[in-house]
Length: 358
Image 1 (cartoon, rainbow, N blue to C red):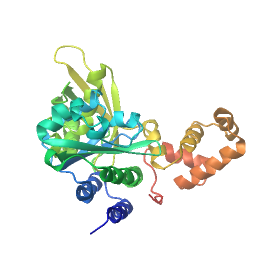
Image 2: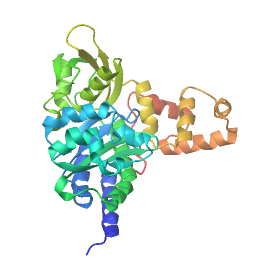
Image 3: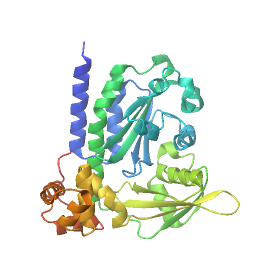
Image 4: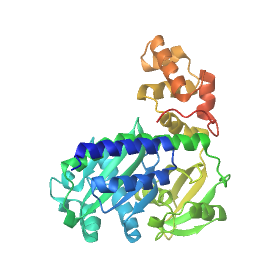
């Protein structure tokens, strides 16, 4: 009989191989889904790419789920009134959570369980945030049918063990998109779409129609727009204020989606997609290189033109300590000088360098 620890060791080894393969995010999600379905014991699930800075879901790969329930799932996620939302799990200090554990064995206390999971025949759900190094690289939700019982401690332990390696794999995929992608049909000018507050497409210009078609996801077909458009629209509508998120197209171009609620009848939201500026990509570029929290602070000050002495004073460090951090930053980013570092992080497209080990 195969021992649980042997299964964990095999799974972790396979994740390492997937990381080294530098697969695009959607393909990586599909491979991970197949790899983990048996060991974790789930019957359906969805994987989300996220804006590494805000954690907003921006892409979805799902298997075994009914697309008709996707809009409800997004609403329940963004209304923030449940202990099992990805943001609530993060706030609680966990990376991994189940409905059963979050509700102390009383899943009926969860709005998500009452309105979505139970009506679909699921008895428990396991959710993971793939946060690493200050970046929010993705998330996943795995549903288990009621007849199979609830997730046990061994499943939770495996989920905890795979969270960081998967976060590293997703971070490597994002760094690869920054450095090596050459979009075949890049967005050059703003593309505009009008959606209702539920996230359903009302109208769009030709550029937005083309972008939405290229980013189509089977799970979101009922609403007609991909996850990024849906979540930023819902967020803006809920807050009654503009919302912004970074998304990555399938061919590797980083865009910014800016959603603004519109006045007048119809309760609509305008979503403008435009190429992410160097300033908008800067936090992503810093996070993607795996810098420590202190190195991230030093890098930001360096990009702003601060001298070593100024950085030391602002961060309450000694000059030699700042110099050590700069040396580490140059090593992780693969450049030789601070000038090259600034050029790297602020360029329209990161130059193709040897990617660091994942």
